[in-house]
Image 1 (cartoon, rainbow, N blue to C red):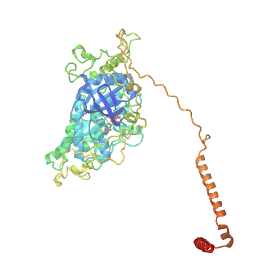
Image 2: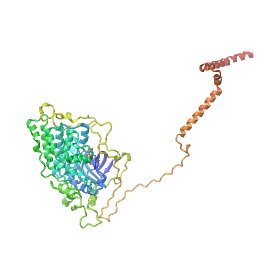
Image 3: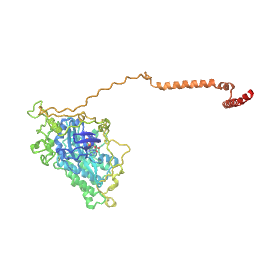
Image 4: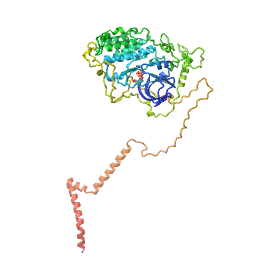
Length: 590
Ligand SMILES: Nc1ncnc2c1ncn2[C@@H]1O[C@H](COP(=O)(O)OP(=O)(O)OP(=O)(O)O)[C@@H](O)[C@H]1O
């Protein structure tokens, strides 16, 4: 186990993505006021440790700090709650609720596609989560099945939980994202993102459309080939309706996959439309519900004011380094009301504010009046954030126990239960159009999906399909003590260096004994053994030849059995002679 900050211990890797590794971890101390959820010692959490190149990027660190209050405040029944953001040395980590269930990508792979009703209801909940985040000014930008975790509640109902909010934005750094690259996953990327046009919350609705298509068909509409080919298909190709997709559901998918962002519904309307479709294509649908489903297009009005995605630095249109906060601060007051806020603009009114004010500098340059030797604002902010965490304890870690050296493998959930494909639990089979024949299967109930966790595979598979050959190497900083002396107080006595145990003197080695095989010829020992055995066999043969009547037998040409018989009779005669000679000898003497 290795510590993260003073409050958490990483236990087991759950999986690895493009931006970092997610760990099962344990809370070892209640977190401070800066955390959204203080947590209890012993509580299990999930921690996403961001990749080193992200953590070492000044822009990412800045955004991490700026957006922490927004991420921490984002709560919704279908959003994985971010509990805390940890900055420790060069390590950036998000502490989340642990979701004990598979992600949708894995679920689809193991169980196959969903029924149209189940897919519609599941995507409606994802759209609910998007609507809540868009209302808060947050665009996810990397919606895909791998970012939807399935949580099974006490009554066996399965709920989608959207995760990785803000991660795409953190990764969207000039140092990491060059002009010809984009943040996202090719199969789920909206045309405007692929083209580098300005993005809005409509990119998430496009992603929801792709997700919905994949849920009912088992694969995304534009896949295969190189990333460039996939992007090109997003831009130029119209998706084709598979025969298994009911018409009203296809209407929703088509709207979501509109090439123009303005043609897509808002997330809120998408959720509403999907629920209408689910009600109208179910086996118990009333004629009115069927009609409502067929007229779903009327419900899919676009968002009149979609949340914008701030431009990346260096991109056309420029970049406001404070854009994240300006987008996000619209819907609710920050500051004292926000227990986790660390944003500078709230100033003294915010009891938990720890960041020095940083005026916006679109070009990322220093503040006016700043001296060349002064630390960059992000350095001060990072230092302040580091100060909030106690320093990592130095503790011995057996290399064989270091979880960073093991391949991430997700534990199968509830292995005692058999796999249960979703099709068996929901409405009509795919080849039917349920909304056209709603009453022919009255025993089937449309409803939210029930997840029966699958049997564990015979061999555990790594979770991610993306090749990740490199194991994360343990960082020096995580083991080494990191004393911090604030630059403003140079008179302060330097922090105590931890006492290192004096290196033990080596005991002198015993002089090396001369080996019986000084040349170390391979196989010589075996050769010697063979030669000795041969010599012994030769001597034994020679003795038998000389000391037994073998030579005579051979000379007489007797058969083996005759020779043995003669030998035995000779010996018995000799014994009887010996026995009979004594009395004879005695009587002869009288
Ligand atoms: N809160 C959580 N609880 C349990 N498991 C989680 C949690 N968050 C992520 N995971 C699991 O961790 C694995 C890796 O997650 P991650 O978000 O890094 O993957 P990803 O979405 O492919 O990454 P990225 O978005 O960076 O490309 C996934 O398999 C996911 O199921």
